[in-house]
Image 1 (cartoon, one colour):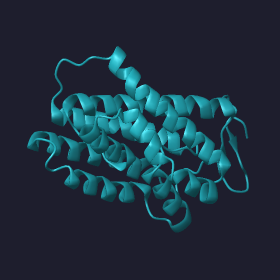
Image 2 (tube, rainbow, N blue to C red):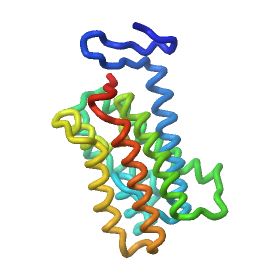
Image 3 (cartoon, rainbow, N blue to C red):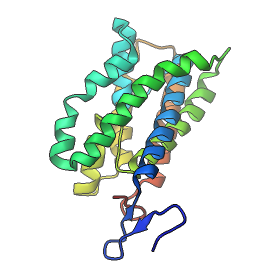
Image 4 (spheres, one colour):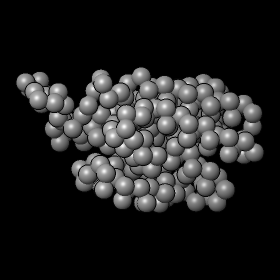
Length: 211
């Protein structure tokens, strides 16, 4: 059966097969949403989790641009992606990582915030990033690093991607206790909860499986 957007459904596996154009649009929209959430977090002085959180910590300590650090951190995980998830997933992920590295710098040029409340930024930014991740996950892409590991464990062992992400995110936030203020830390925790709530509710192997 083919819909108006030419999304195909495999009658044997019930997997959804997307067209190349749909994959391109999903990766663009997903990375834009995540990058905008990252920009909100940075403006409010918050920290996020996953690979981006590690990149933030290194960026704050070294001054190396976030996009450069984020791209370099992901390099070792491409081997796991190729070996366990296939070349198509790896190529999409490489493109998504590269776009996020680019967009994270571009947002700062086009969007300027006067003042952002850390709690508001944590919730709204976290929700935006969560929806961006869902767009990527449903088109068999990710933002590398911990996302690759989370998707691999979910596909192979049924471990919820959202639960693993949340555990890693909380560890990163605990490591940042001496880097941010208490309001910023609480806002960061709210952001991690909001992001992973979206992933946990919407990315489940028994609800939606994309090819």
